[in-house]
Amino acid sequence: MTHIHRRMFLVGAGVAASLPRIARAEEAIWRIPVTLTDTRVLVECGLAGHGPFRFVFDTGGTIGLIDMKLVETLKLRKLGPSTLALRGARKPYPIYEATDLVFGGQLRQPSAAFAGVEKFNFRDGAVGSLAAGMLTAVDGELDFANREWRIRRGATPDRTGWTRYDKAIVSYGNRNGSSFLLADAILGGKSFRFGLDTGWTGAMQIYRKTAEAAGLWDASRWSPAAPDGKARVVRAPSLGLAGTVIEGVIVTILEHPEWELFDAGIIGLPILRRFNMATASAEKALYLKSNGLPAQREWYNRAGMWIERSGRDARITVVGAGSPADSAGLKAGDLLIGADFNMLVERMYEPAGGKLPLTVESGRARRDRRDLVLTLADFLG
Image (cartoon, rainbow, N blue to C red):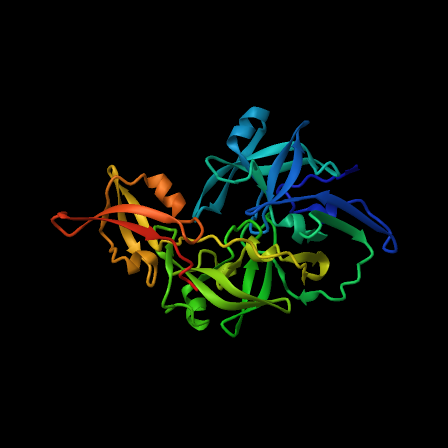
């Protein structure tokens, strides 16, 4: 097991400087297992002699995060606050020191710092996340096909068959934070530079100006999505990335960019997992190579309606064009009488063919009540 001797403030930000010096002619590789689920890339990490615990490998993160419950259990030392933009808002978060951080039983770091968060749904049993610097600050590889994160020191491997992206490792915002990954991709016949975010569980998220340029904003069929049904989910005919064309990509469209650096949008894990990713940190270069992994089952609102709680019932607030809800004549403002809100939301994301029995009350007087069965469909085509 290798010991890293330099303390890092942010997990991943200083890995390159911390690794042992090796003659250039030599090569050292640290092979750290990763788990790939439907929604996450996970790394097993020990903390302060405890664990291992699951952490999300998040190339969209500027700083490592940790659940406050674990902070309290391990009695981590508080370093102070730091203002971060998480969940779409900037506010102070407490920063904690974690000692004796061990990645996958292979690589040890004496000390690192995490931002403490509460009620943050990391999913798949994870208790925190590792920032983008785990890949951007080193010559590293995320090999999804072989479920392995590799850190290299020394000789540069042959990258024949890989697509290289220059100026792909970019610093932004937090001066102590991680650099991020960007790559050019073809959407709607036009090239855009997208952020690459392994922590994003959707296939793609773009913004209105990108959607308009790619011919997606006025799609005849769309489904509402968060936040509050204001986003649109559409199907793009294709996405071109690293010499590979992916047909029929599900794309979420928001009105305005959430982050200036990724002003065209981001590509998430459902697409990125189909490419192995490698970095040449000193050159600010990224390499991508198709790995042959199959596409995942698509996940979107196949009912095509957005609902909110309304007492013991649910109220429809948005109906997507060309959706099953639209075809059934459902309108914004309709009440779904006696609906189990949580169960209904969950069921709307089930595969096509699912049946949703509904009692609908329409009209200002609320006297027009009818029963119907809504059939989920892959209506985006």
